[in-house]
Length: 348
Image (cartoon, rainbow, N blue to C red):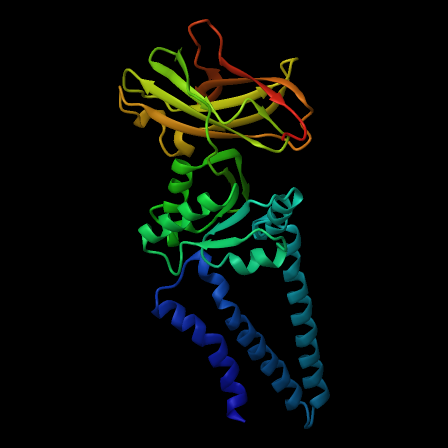
């Protein structure tokens, strides 16, 4: 029947036609062409089946042999096409399994997860089976920045730790409201980790800070660290030590610098570290206005197996293009000692 021939052709061609007419062609949308692959497979099946059916008359053996060879070639070709999906890194998808495992490794009651991207929830929930609530943002189809900001602020207020998976935010959150709200009102902890094209980040909701410490330390010729404040001086392994810096420059800066915060043990061995441009990588030093204070939040994520004891907390800056080039302080060091931090177990 004619419909048996037309149906696979329509099945294969219609999604492609709609794709082109609606202007949907972009790499992130190619997955929506999967129905066309099914239709194309049916077209190939109809072709092989047609040759097999044609072998019912005289000379049918040769025709059916040709159809059989077609089927074998097609099977071998398709099986060989699967190999790159298992062995070629270019075809690997972001490792959602590892991200879900990281979140589940040491869960806490105040955890939350933000998926800052379209169409992440289905694949993430396939791997994540924990109890932390999952918030796909922006709400709906996006476009309402005020609603998105309000939703993020509510999450910060209700939760202590927030894990964020950034992917495709340029499409749904072009003004980066989710990230800028978190950077301004929470403390990013540790370093961003890339899993393919997904950026995995962790934030801590703001805790009450201790009284600010006036420092007045100078880095290089014009950058000053006027004061800083800590969330605590005694913390537990696995906690996030929150630090707020008040920076200022006296002259315009032409070099971008990263801030590094490090926790050293008594022997000077690095135990925890965070490196980032100021204000969650959103306000580089070249954009600082001379004379204006830059409030810069950092969260230092402490390892779960960090031994108890006394540690040194230091801060410094280095050239983003040459990490070995640190800005010197007045005393000639490449960092400033902020405080001594006590790591304790079972903090009350």
